[in-house]
Image: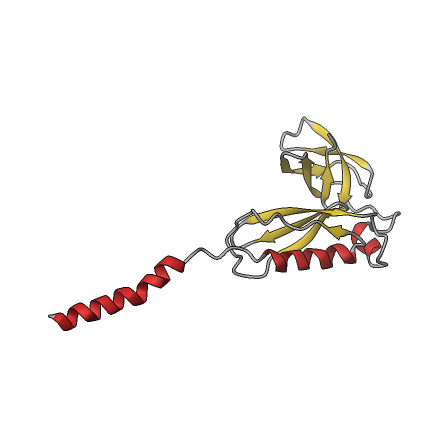
Length: 170
């Protein structure tokens, strides 16, 4: 009986430190900052660091970083469904010859064609909304084009930001 007591006590003592120190793994922001800095550098910009107070579950695979527009990067964890926006500073395309290929296509080629599906966004400091629309006309980056939403009768206009993407300025 006393032997069982000591075995149980030893098992509890061995498990106790694990229970006390076990915490959900949170994302490694240093790695994310390094990745966003590399992408922003390729665009000739500087990425602002991610706020360390944000606590997100660690992504089981490497997070992806993509340019939303000339001023913003998106950090995404597809398996867990979280996304962060990272602001960029500095003049657009100043440092890198590669930046032009990332920020804008050839000026003569439309990046949106009539009938294309377009992701339309409205961004403010306090919220961001995105929805699908269909292009009514061709458009180049920086041009304002007409789009049709889910209601065939209503149209809206938005500024083309890239292939399949447009923004409504507020």
